[in-house]
Image (cartoon, rainbow, N blue to C red; front, side):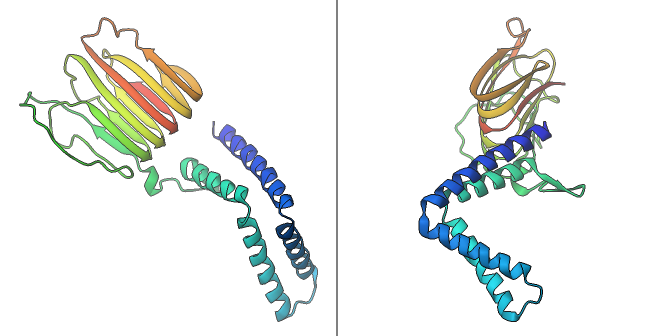
Length: 244
């Protein structure tokens, strides 16, 4: 899976590079300035004995190349794609994992429990879009979960709770990152998931989606006394539903 992701990333970057070259050829002054800087830099590199002026030439050439590159819109798209991919997938250099646990990829462990029913009343609260969120440090009455997350992994663990009878709802809206649901055996699950690109694992079945929506019911959904409706929407990221 990781190798396939890198292959996809390289193909996308190569296509963007071709687009960048086309835009460069379409801008004649920037094109000739780039060629001049490359020739000048090549001359300095190949020169055996370099003077202080030659070092100055190489620095100026590099600055000109950088400015010419940043004047091409496709180069900015390449940089954005690279930052998003490395930030989400990580990269290894000489066996050392970089960006393995950046702040925007911190996992969220949501522990849910139940207690005796209380009188219902309106409430107002905030939840961060990025960073670690923990729910269920203290026992509380079950309430439907409604999350909006910009990026990062989210884990919702229902293994230590007893859901109320009838229908319960979990809604997750996310930009980037993986979502994992740990659901006890015996609870009927309805899953409705939409994504631009990602994979779904449900009832030991695995699916790969590209700008698609999918809807599943667990085998015991119709006869289960406790049911869980899960509705998720992501731009890029995987979804796993695991029985515990």
